[in-house]
Image (cartoon, rainbow, N blue to C red; front, side, top):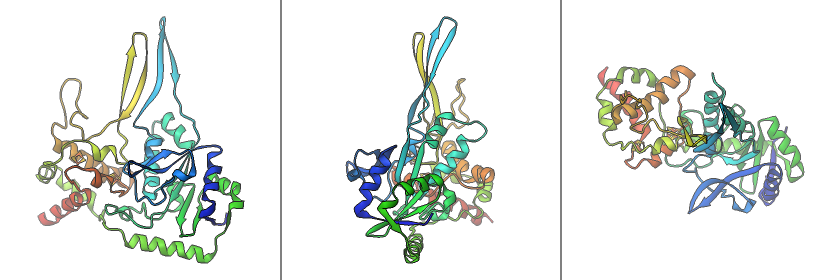
Length: 346
Ligand code: SF4
Ligand code: SF4
């Protein structure tokens, strides 16, 4: 389908149409900060946001969720599963966050399919918004996860702000169905519009404030595992878990039961490898006894083991962990420093 221009004067109509058959989740202002929330009217949408502190992936993998209720009846258990099949549209999701969902898909659609995640994922439409002004902590271009977006990333539609109008690019059949429903609200985009989008994408990429050179990083980390570098680096980490909780690619979770006599529910909630007790075993042994081992594990999982296993790092360069860390741990500096350690040794 041909790309379309929707004049900003008609964007409210566009959103109203989306709201006909789905819950629309969009960036809104909460206490002066942008946060993805379900909206009740198009006027709530905060179009000028940079990036949100909390990723909208929380609507696919929530902070906590009830998996099922159980009730004992004699010698049997009655189970009631809580599969969420609400139709949702995430409007304005940034390219890096779209890419993070593609990575989470591989985890939750992998050897064991997770019906809770997959149901939400399959019922969610992604309408992405291209970044024209990367934030001060962004380094997505190091991973190819932004500031633009290609069809493989997994969004259904991509919006690009051209001033008076939004340029709308269709990536999937689901996106095409939406554009057919709203055809009367737009006009066909021209080749000049397309060129303007390409120029904006190049400008945004050239304005990326930070870069991380991944070349040779897993190999360098392979030589550094026992290095005192990790003692030095992790010394100021508080093990607060903020970097891990806010990372759109981190997916570790805990599962526990809440019971009252013969009935209860099983709950899943986020966990964080940077918490001191994350690896604690029931016998009292902790294979990662200090913050150093926890922090190092996080770095190795994302930037060595994942690259070797999947061919890509478990990071999209969103910069949230840099922004959130109370002691200014900077993942780009930590990893660049790790590489330079090996160069210095050689
Ligand atoms: S590790 Fe940091 S920069 Fe990378 S995706 Fe997670 S929060 Fe974003
Ligand atoms: S946010 Fe900073 S202090 Fe907290 S766990 Fe992460 S690196 Fe450590």
